[in-house]
Image (cartoon, rainbow, N blue to C red; front, side):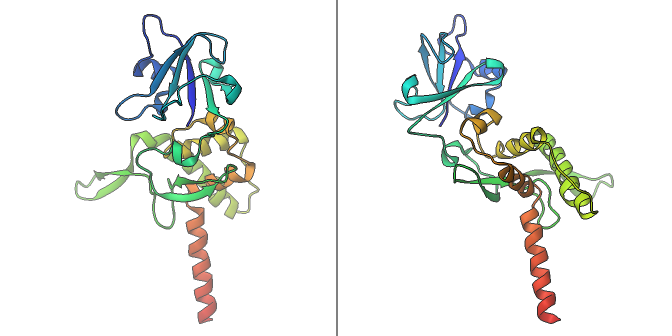
Length: 236
């Protein structure tokens, strides 16, 4: 599990949930309860602050720089670290409820579950809401607001990897876009951002492509096409 070092908040012994959300660290907070916290006189930025640990493991929330690795978060607003002998794993970073999807093995050797946002075969695994259509009788599946951004990204990836590729176009995606979408897909099931993913070196270019493919159910599509080809071969 990761450690976080955040600036001291005047008049407080520890930052509130609102303070952490303002820093962009709301994703490390459990739905109920809190994270372990320890005030330190000097952290990785050489400044006083508060050390945070979402792990709940006794003795985990300590600052021992010789035994830890630390990297700067966005614009240095906070720092992210981990114990060198206890590197964060897929299991430790899972959210309490894992949404089904395709397993993708990343550079750490773990299989990370990527939810399906768009699919031609089995439908999305992301939870969706049921809403009445304009006729007042037909119930339609609609994306949940918290997944609007990821589903929009999935539509972009689907158009790129399926529609345009099948039309014979040469397609590619910039790392900035591909990694933003890939990390966003992982963040559905894991307490992780681009900075944690970089800190523990999760991705190669191929791994990024596999996550994007899983997001739009390309493995399911390939399985369906393979099954159809075998059936036609057997009957032909």
